[in-house]
Amino acid sequence: MADPSNQPALEQHGSRLLRLPGELRNSIFQYALTSDTPLTFACDNITRKPMFTTKNVSEQYVCDVDLHDVNQIKFVCRQLYAETAGLELKYNCIRFGGPDGTYSDRNPSELFVNFLQQCNPMKSRWIKQVTLRRGYGSGSILNLTERFRSLMRLVEFCQSHPQAVVHYVARAFTYREHPQVSCDKDTCALLFLLHGACISLAIRSIDIRPLLPDDLSMAMWFGLHGLSNFDFRKKLDIQNLRFWPEEGLCARDFSDLLRIASANSRLSDDMVETCIDHATKWIQEGL
Image 1 (cartoon, rainbow, N blue to C red):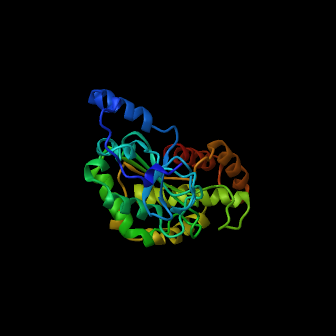
Image 2 (cartoon, helix red, strand yellow):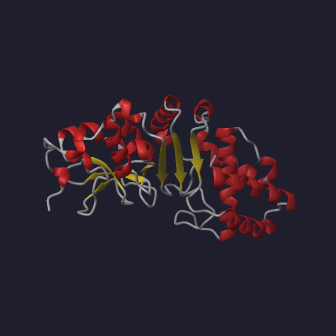
């Protein structure tokens, strides 16, 4: 069967759907276009047509016969195209970045702001929640200088669209072992604490250095290299832009690891409990 996305939108004279009142059609559209899972941005590898799909693709450009635009209604006829094109933005969380949080050629913030350039400004107002998923990269969440312009345009979007919430998820912000960092589980727990402390200080002006061992406090200044511009950091301090650890983390797992690691890191029991409180908030609420 031919892919309907490659067929021209046709006129549908006498359609029962089009004879329904607009309010009822809108309810049908909402039901048909609402997904149980976030929609992932992708482009067809051949046509380069952008789309949102329910499939958790790993590359920006894909060649997959099973990959379809979630909004098939718009391909039925010209009127339905006019009424429903982009309507999936209104009813779903949208995601930029594949299962490993990375695309081969662009960072998720760049993908999103380039999508916004092509999006009708009225339809961009429909966006309620965006998840930007970044891969391991250099092994540090803090190396943000390469995306300075994209991040500033992302900030502008957040400021002009207060109804939207942007979640920036970085897989390097984790207590789990990962390919870019060779260390044991105890050290991974301390690196997670270091990353969160750096972001808290750089973007939210929350200083937890007194809770950290001296070696971690010193490491913070090296970690802050990518966020060295004070004015740049303050622009990121907006409430509808949240930085999140890797998805699927468990506060209880981290607390167990940190308690084990504390024996070699000169963390007192009180400091450990306070650090666990901060980490739990990062995992559950973002930064």
